[in-house]
Length: 404
Image (tube, rainbow, N blue to C red; front, side):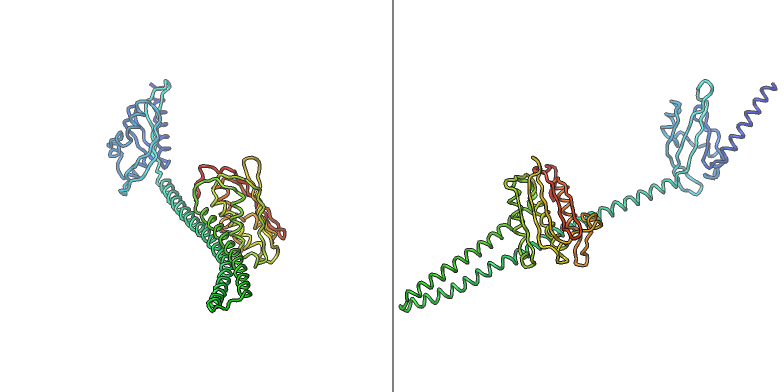
């Protein structure tokens, strides 16, 4: 009897120690028998629910803990789940529930111990993180949409500058032709009047024929020049709107683009030389390629010669192995320092913000070359030594590329 009483006393002491420990931690703790009937709750249950132990125990805990509790009892495995519990303030709060089986020396389950941990703060933090993430994603989408709009506007602006340059250049041969045609019209009227009077001389006839031949030659030369420029620009403009992949001669296309870029350069004392290897056939996107050359040209025009140094731009086109081509655009202008060179392809970076430059020209070039044409780009530049930009493009552009 003494040994049994001593064992019972030790067990009671152990239970008191466990209850004291369970009451000292902030979680809601409970114990259940092997069948899942909960028979003990720590004091925090009363503090949270405002109810007595008897009232708490009267709940249908099988319904509260759900089907997973029933499965845990059947299989004798630990349970972890989330549920909501009603507090004394009338508010439901989320709890993380854990139930662990208690086993005797023969590994048989003789009871269960469970905890409910208030995860309201964690849930609130997760919601705040989700809200912040959603707001950041929305801001990023808005930024990308704005950037895409600006890029499209910059593309149109570049084409607009080409239109203005070509229109100005076409005005010269067309204006000359109009002047020659007007003078020829007057000479023809005078000649017709003299012939009508019947006193036409051989010298007058010879003079009229000489003037007509000279005027005709000038008209043909100037109008052919205007027609060539119009045809070249028409092809470039058509390619800009051509979203399908097609086969073309890279040298011919480069020459056509260059022709539309040259107007007005002579007045600024600048030159654009083109050196293309013949018969370089490509299956790619001519519009985006033309956009790349245009942006490189306009960027060089705006930045390379701002200090009056240099006067030449060059485009060189060569084969690079069997499956690629190399396009080199270079100028002998002022060049870039290391900091500018490092940021050259970044969106919205420009050294001429005061002159209404957007800083998207080279960014568009990089995007088209790497994303649309499936190539790569490299920039080399030093202050006072000009700039060279090398493009390596596949002769057959990736079929999955969606040209915008």
